[in-house]
Amino acid sequence: MEGRALGWTPISVLGPMGRTVADTRLVFSAQVGMDDREPLAFPVDSDAIASARPVDLGRLRVAWTEDFGQCPVAKEIRTIFRSRVATMRHLFRACEEVGFNFGDADRCFDVIRAQSYVGRYQAAYENDPSSLGPNVRTNYEMAVHMSLADMAWAHAEQTKIFRRFQTVFHDYDLVISPTTSVSPFPWTELYLRSLDGKQLRNYYHWHALTYFVTLVTNPAISLPCGIDEHGMPFGLHVTGRFHGDRDLLDAAEAMEHAFAKIPGLGRPRPVVAKLAKPIVDLKSIVTHPPILQ
Image 1 (cartoon, rainbow, N blue to C red):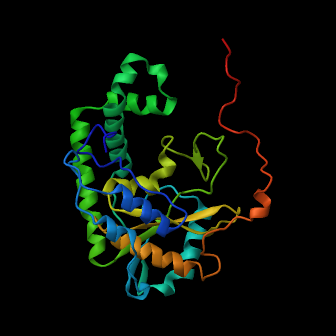
Image 2: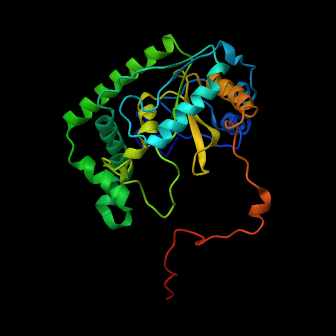
Image 3: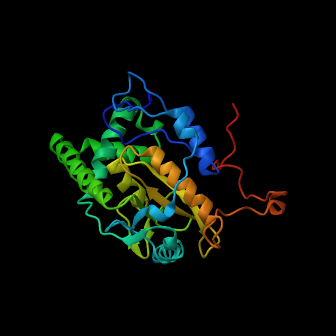
């Protein structure tokens, strides 16, 4: 991945997206491959990734958590998630709530993320800070106030978090959680500032459910899992064993097929007739006409 300046830091990766797990794994099979220039690469059989192996969900042990012990999650998302777990738990050999110790994951992610922003944007910031968006500048400026001691602490903390998390897979095959902490909000709102009346730490704090998993670097996939009370898509975040990408995809595809047969768990499908005549307020995030010379 040539776009990642810090090759020994796995915080930034390229991942596939697809309408179904089958489509996703097809894209993934075209992406993966060994390269001598990538220090963190490990062998993966691309042909094997593309084709699913049958999985008996009744043999899988699933751990679930609604917040990894400390992530901010809206009450309504917690309620929906618990309802989804209750509906699907019969599919598995075991489906149990598990406690996690993620230490000081928020601060750790702040430092690790800031390091990556310095690696990528230092030249642009030093040349012309205004050329970067406000969020990028915020990350960069956060980093310049950190020390080598902060970096050493963050990498040590990430290692501890990683090692503790892997022990969960001694007893379980998958970990499931909500994908996001809130129901989708208008795209015109840049980010979420508060949750259930509580101020969030920064503009990305509402992503904690996913960046906690980013810190441990295990493979993860978000599966569509019905809709919430606002009629918006609800995502189930499924995390697999370290380097267990193929096993995770196999399990996710089996779950997708099972969910399709259970009311309330399947992927939401649009009413095509309603999309025949699109009605939009804006065609893009551009709010002013171009300046003509």
